[in-house]
Length: 305
Image (tube, rainbow, N blue to C red):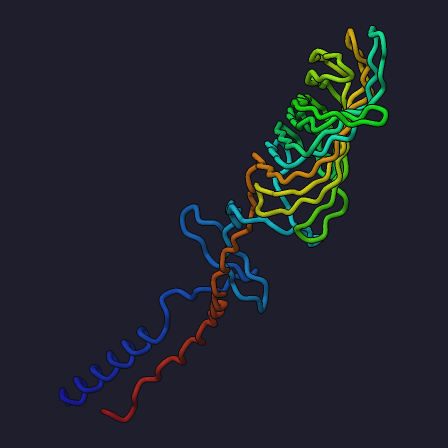
């Protein structure tokens, strides 16, 4: 019958179409080495068996950050090394200065007795670490109170002035927290000006002499900040003896006490801190393509005609 033949032909066409849709036009084989196909000039990413694909991380970039470095690894308070300014002021107490008159009919021996005075100094220094060096100018003034000659003490008045230029070195002993004890001393030039005075009916003239001078110091400094420290110190300074036309003077010496301030020019160090870049989350490994088996050929349907 024509109807049966037409129905058989339609079923056959339908079965062949289904087989064509099921069977892939081209089987894609999985790469044997486990690498993904590339396109264009993209780099080939090779995957080890069983390992996830991870994108490379960006290199870490150092970031410069100025930090307030105050305490070093040893627990010591740090301050700016290098150049600094120093200034100090305090009191001075000259020792008695012996004298002997000459070129008079009756020469006398005695002592000049001074009262308390004041002293200031200032200068430029350089901090090498445990050792510091300074070049300073200092001024000391004290009043002449009386003269002691043999068995009588005639009154006297006047001012003794001392100007110094010293090159000094100091040793900063091991610090304890912010406190640092130190000792030091210096040598240099001293200009000493003595007053005129009367004794035994004779009047001496004033004098002004440039002399060899020296000083010694012991003190303690306190680190107030990275650039500032304050200090307190005791001093002992002196000059060699000298002579004028009418008087021979012994060496001059004085004790003193000062409070002072140092300003350091150095700036805080810059610390380089590594800024970490977070790594991206790992990508899962791609699934390996498994080709599907070819479908069985469809047998023609029988019994429809």
